[in-house]
Image (cartoon, rainbow, N blue to C red; front, top):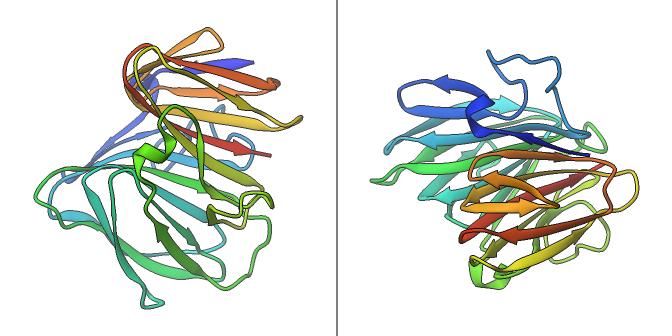
Length: 232
């Protein structure tokens, strides 16, 4: 089953410094049919104005992945961590027993991110944070795992969840595949471009919710960047 969730039909919030689209119920956007997708709880498409961002606020017992699409985001937290994550790169925060953090766009340009929350396997663990550069060339033409809690994904940023996040960049006319284990679900969003997923056309920003499929055949109608989350 493949369900297209068009960008224009997603939840919307405008805060002046922040324009966002919610793929799942979040904050003031509520849709009982879109509370989560397996263990995937949040997928927000955030556009953050220059020299603004999310001031320090707390989280607990959630795996939070930030995929930077454009610009950069600067992270600071109550553990003393700080770092700047640029477009194409990923940061992961395991909130565990509790962490407070800020995510600021300190750049002179707009920043765009995917903010992805996944429910953890286990609660009450110490909080952690990490970031890692993933040059786009490494995932040109095929999916590369960026963050994962699955045992075989030793090169990825670790998360405490039965999930993985992968990304690919495809030139127009290129195609690739993604194999899905039995009983798992996938949520996929083209960050840019236009793709076809098992015959379903999706344009930048659209969500594609996938279940009861074992093989995804993804082809690019335009130069495209694709982010995919695989969950139980």
